Length: 208
Image (cartoon, rainbow, N blue to C red; front, side, top):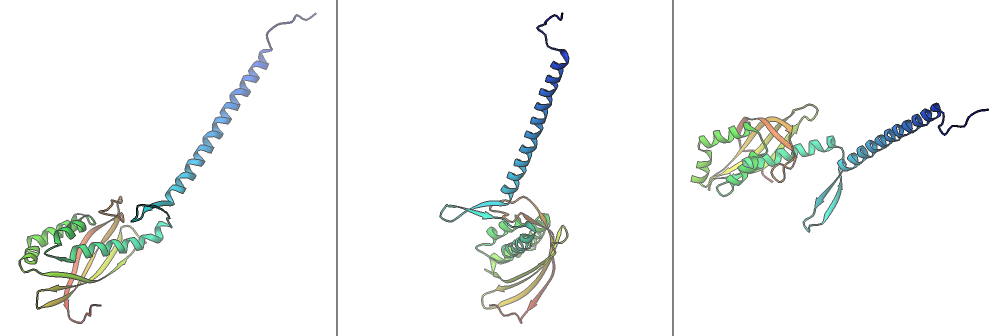
């Protein structure tokens, strides 16, 4: 006759414990996988969406398109803004314009600014009340390879009172990505290796 014992078979207990442990491990693994998936999905949705503030103060949702498609547009806008700030100057605005321009380029731009200052360019601007007005800015950018090489043709005129001379300036350099800085560098690009490759006086350009 078998004696009854209050204890269960040790193998049954071990199997139950093993089942519980495996269940917890599998559950935790599934939870982690699902969490990672949701975080990645949320990140993609966040990256592809942005908001802008209208002039009335309302929030406007914007859908961002592929960055590569926008890169050329932003690069051209960055170059136009820089050249306009750096070369569209007169006695009343040159300090403000040059300050904006220096945010858009690296030490190569600063070195050119200091050279012009040492050569007395801005002193003559003040002394003779010169007005340097940009008429046209045309840039070409190669966005297929970093850093992005560019070449810009800037047409500007210098008004000396009764005399107005028109010039064609060719500049070259590269563009690199930097963090966007509002409002000083909204495109998140920086001009490097900036160089004034040629400057010639032209009389056959008709401003529009």
